[in-house]
Amino acid sequence: MGILSRASYIVRSKLNSVLNRAEDPTQTLDYSYEQLRDELQKVKQGIADLTTQKKRLEIQKRRLEDNVEKHNEQARAAVEQDRDDLARRALEKKKQKMRQIEELEGQVADLQGKQDQLIEKKDQLQRQIEEFRTKKETMKARYEAAEASARVSEAVTGAGDEMDEVSKTIERAEERTEEMEARSAALDELQETGALENQISEKSKLDRELEEVTTTNEVDAELETIKSELGEDTEAADEAVDIDAEVDAEVGEVDPGEVEEMDPPAIDENEVEAELEELKDEE
Image (cartoon, rainbow, N blue to C red):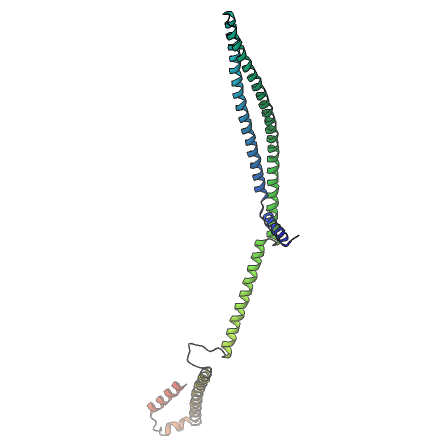
């Protein structure tokens, strides 16, 4: 086998393989059924044409038969008139017409035979078409049922081309999602470590760290201030309590009689009340 022959064989094989995959049995069955119906229609048309030709020959035969009868009458009339020559001519025409009638009868018989054959072929073909139609509908129903079952099985098992595409789509989506998650995590890590600085802000990483330290120190200083203020208020309150206790103790040691005899010290009551009020406010 030459190179061209081998190449042609391979091309035909590939083409047949593609056609077999693309072939739909239901369509081919319908096409074959229509072809048979067309053939039956041609046979019927042939029968009609033969019948028409036979009828024409039969009409010609009847006309010739009428002429034969006419020539017979002419021959008798010529004999009665002692015109044998005319009678002879009439009989000769009669013989010609009879020979034509015989030929027409043969042609009519031949056409009748062909017509009978076509009618028999038509009846046989019609029976085959009816049988084929029944088989066609049965095969179409079986194929459609098998096709539906195959589609369901492919959908369930994921063995079909469409399910294969769906699986590939899901895999691609998972890969893209994982890639995006990894990118997001990497950006977060770079931002936390300072390797990826904010392009909008003009501050560097060192500026931000110093700012954080300064803020922390200011907060700590303010906290210590609040604590010291609270400590001073507590000491002032303790001193006021000690003063009240000393005053009460001194008053308890003095005899009431002596108190009446002793001159009261010169104490400014307004001053005392003001100091007490200050102590209370400090508390």
